[in-house]
Each structure stands twice: as structure tokens, then as C-alpha cells.
Length: 120
Image (cartoon, rainbow, N blue to C red):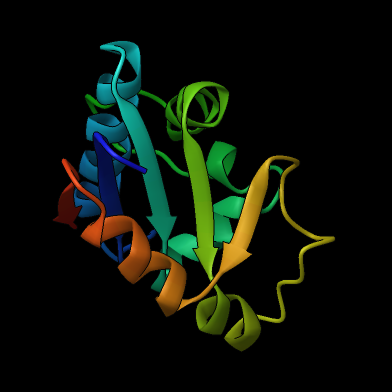
């Protein structure tokens, strides 16, 4: 995945500002024409399920549901395999277009040429 911005978000409702910042950066990068891979880990894994992003609110921030839709429309979203398993989330549970993948896939993405990685 040359020329990709890989963003790993580790927070969900437990860290709303970090969570929203990651989604905002990812959506802004997609809107700017960049290739984006957003990884949902820890509590952010819940946002891979239908309706969960609409249940998140942060004052003065774009709705997470809209940011998620933007990233999904123009980028890639992945849920960490272990994070999904700990929450009993299966591939059949997630929003269409979101995948579940593990550490080897993450490492391959961040080690590709011209790739930048951010962790929130």
C-alpha cells in the first residue's frame, strides 16, 4: 500500500477526544485525496458495528457517524483481530466494507514504501 496514511485509533467512548481526532484526521485525509487505512483497536472496535458511531457525541466535533462514512467511502477500515475476538465481534457483525485483520497485516501496511503511521 504505497503512499498510504495508516491511522490506528485505540480509544472509543473511554477517550472521546483521541477517538474523534483519529477519525477526523482520517476523514480529512480521504477528503484530501490521500489513501487511508484506519485501524480500530481497543474500545474503538465497537464503531465497526452498525449504529454504534451514531451513539457517540463530542461537543464541537463532526459526528463520528459522518466521519466513519467518509473514511469507509474512500479508504479502508480494519478491526484488530484480537480486539474483535475479545468483544465477540465476528466478520458477519461489522458494517459492510470493514474487515477484521491481525498484526501481520498492520505491520505490512506500515512498512510499505511511502507510508506514514499515526496512533491515537
